[in-house]
Image (cartoon, rainbow, N blue to C red; front, side, top):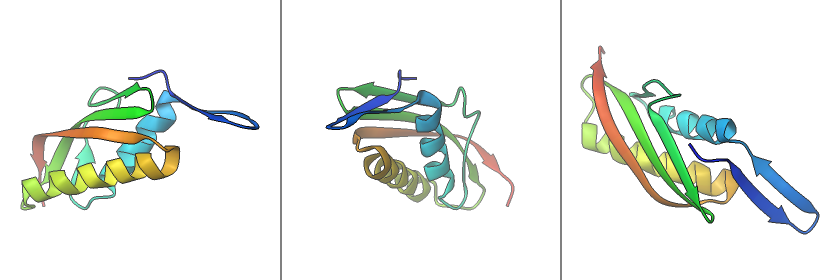
Length: 103
């Protein structure tokens, strides 16, 4: 996990902590129907480098959903949330579907 994200503004700085960034990622991923982040503290990794982000997620998916579509939707939601909420340029969202859950 990163050390957080600092936005430098004219009137001072804004710091978004690693736990807040993780919550953004988790909630964005889980806003996709049929997706759940597995073990959010260990199954979610966010690396920041000079305003650019790379995310790795382990997901549980509901049985019956089209897995590639689910993964692409999660990638889009996470990238959009980070870009919109904390002005990060998201280079990649790597998704690993680790388990299936009952309907």
